[in-house]
Image (cartoon, one colour):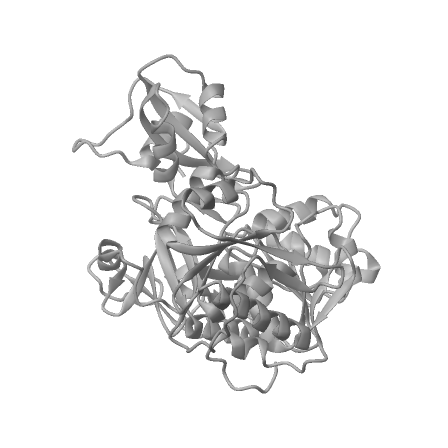
Length: 506
């Protein structure tokens, strides 16, 4: 770790390291970007956004793949206004929803994005100006397309730096406004947890439209003065080569990625990739068997962590040696307080099972413009995570299940209601209920049950969904049924539907 004082804004995070040090490594080209260059690029891009009319609080959407462009755009947007990164794999309907829901004032796309790009079409429909991000061979990023000339002012800790969506089991996705101070505190917590230093190189395998990749892999490393190796995409076939060429010392990923690495490593770890000092897993449960196999492969500790968007990512983690790590738990609280609460709002003693609740400076105080969700999610100063768990006497948290009915596909949290609503737009569908089913690689896969009013096949409904949903959200199995199981009061319980159709009782 650096000796810098705790950061209050994301500018503090990127300003902590000496300018001559390497900040970013681009594996595909071997290019390196220094901290001095990164800071200059961020300032220039922030001024470009300001010149395009962006003011504090204005949302700048971006649909960019991993690389220097998304890092520069994200940080610059957080300075000039508020960053709103989106999954570039979204379909037109999804871009339309998120651009409208965030009230985006600008959209940043790759310079090579085609004219019929779905994000471009969705922005044009809403008359949202489009800027393009261009990256040269040296890793230099330029934002093109704005004609004005204004300088962005420095952000304050209470400015909203990042707006993300998180999905509940019902209703529309909820907007999570993360302030500079929330993200800065979480960044420091991650860096402290893993004792990150200027000697560390993080291999960023997570997409940078998620808080996992942004905070853990990227911001925490930049604050520590280390380097972030950021390939354009995760490729298990080139994983070991990238580890070797970047001299990576750690990486963080969801269990699905860990499993793919294990599957491609039958001959063991190459001898020239031994700098890895730990492996982090987060955003979905890590099976104990997988953790043990990873440790055997890497010869380094595997540390499972617990994070969520509303807490600016990390809430708990297993610690580095010599402290004990406990497989099957997500470790102890990191910089926040964790409790377990019963249904009436009482905190429970160690060993009791209940809903996991959190509070601390990295946790949001409210969802944006969502009083109903706020009333349900905040109680006695605690945020209700929707997860069920048990704290042991030493503070290690074991997650025992999800109270919410989210589908967790390889770390991607999917709201079933969103898939319901897409299926219900098909003229042949009268009822639709989506749910998760077990999958050996992804943890869960998306399935649905539908009642038809007119003839349609499973293949037709899957094809219809795939045109309107990102691939990870699209149902892979659709059951055509005569009726949807309901409770005596007429409510649909997704887990009961799944059990009735698949025989899986958890």
